[in-house]
Picture 1 (cartoon, rainbow, N blue to C red):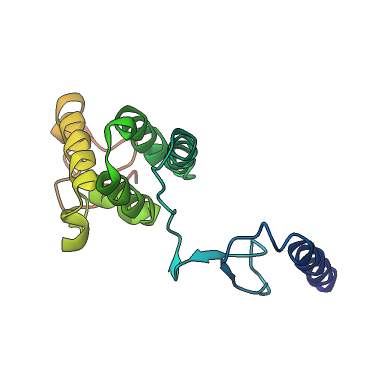
Picture 2: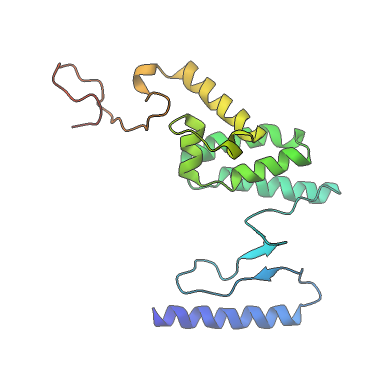
Length: 182
């Protein structure tokens, strides 16, 4: 652990020295210092908002960069179900979005994976602020329609209930448990 902290400290010195040398090209971002146990060296915050992407639709190059960044964030979340559903939806709709739509998309992308998946699939009721997001509403409608058209009700949990069933849910004998794979 001590060698890891020494390595992080050395990396911080190198980055600070590089930032001083290239100070004319550095944008005015605040950086948080390195903390023990932190995965990244710096967390950038623009205008006090952590985790938000600056939206610049002024020219084609900035649009392309923004769209690529949002596509990457939607396809590489680390939660396979969301990667597939969210990534495909963003790929189909991002080029027709205006600035407000992109802001709504960024707000959806800032949500935590487990909560977002439960809200989109109807396992839990989302907060009112999330329900009012137009991107979230379109995504949820698409997912619910897909579930209704491709999955039988016996294979899914009821709305508002978590998905806890196992692979052998439907038991043939009368005394078997209703849920789980015991």
